[in-house]
Image (cartoon, rainbow, N blue to C red):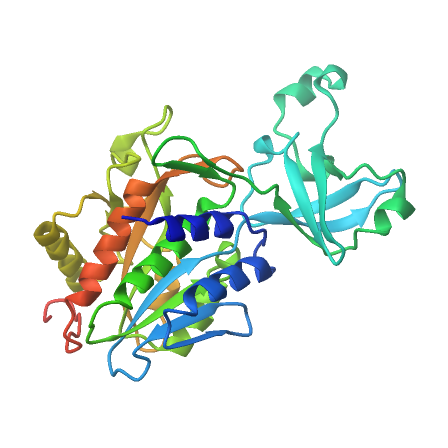
Length: 357
């Protein structure tokens, strides 16, 4: 079970702001939480936080969860004191008008709201069209350009306004569950593994810049040089209208963590996870994923150096890449248990070579 201390850490992590390339706040929260459990901990030059157990062990197992989030960046300040901006990561423009944001400046967080021409003043064609980001702006209440420039600079990162809410006993709502919930899962697994006698080394890596192309996972995995790895990210919950389960799998909130069978998942490692799930009665949901390969840290780690045995564990997520994402803590508990029991089962002599191990 996730205890009160872990839940407090989850809330603190979700309430940080840090789009890809600017993950300073979450890195500090992550580092401070893991430090008491780690045999070694550091933050690298990209911003990855790497906490280790048994760092001198011959067999190293890497856990990866990215703690960057989608967001924006200041492009210019308009004469009216309004802010033009560009996206950082994949953004659905339909979700943006009227959304609250925070501009992360040297003088602190500056609140603002994304503006658009009111519907009353739009032409019939404009009402039907998907808004373009270049036709939107951020309003911070400044009187003019000079007033805005006292606080905001070109290049400042912008995040969705901080939010955290428990919608029920198990469902959590926040702007950046993708993928701070995954970073939380590996941190909790790491904390539990620190209390057990394990025969392998474990590197818990909170990665950066995933939303810009898995960049933190590339350098993080190269530095750790693991034999095997599990990445934890969010996956698509299909228990809402308009998503076809026959195409993406029947994935429900609260049904257990999602496992995948595709090219990113090493067959012997996946087989071990499934064996552990059956032995320990850990719930899970199986899919092929929405693509044959790519899209998560798993793909980058797998291709590191001479190759790494990898598996992806996903937390079902509703409304991905919006400020209103929802996940279920029962799926989090499932993911943590799968990771802890799988690593605890290792002797350190495994090779995970398909068709041999």
